Image (cartoon, rainbow, N blue to C red):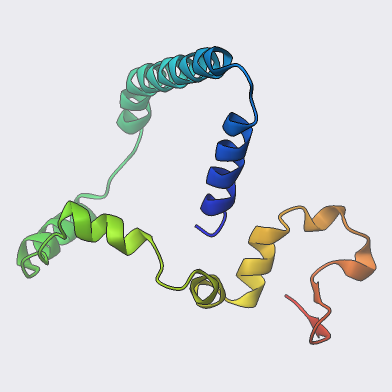
Length: 135
């Protein structure tokens, strides 16, 4: 979530840096059509393959009955938020605090540095600020 502002800023600067607006428009249309095409192809392949995959699954009848009875006995679902409430909940009031509180240091460091295995052994999984060996 904290990377989203950087991506949006990069898009805005990239688009604003072009001299030819038509070229940006053509690239946008091409990217949009490519996205829709890939999404449609993936959906079609998934719709064709998944019924066969699900047919191979063996579900224990007792476990299935237990889940069904638990689902019917549960309390009513909480009220759904409106679209405006949902969109508002996506934006943190304090982005820095959200980045610090959203995940512990180890998870945050793993997200920032996903290629930790490429570092030399002496630098892997180490928090230099507090001289802590991470798991």
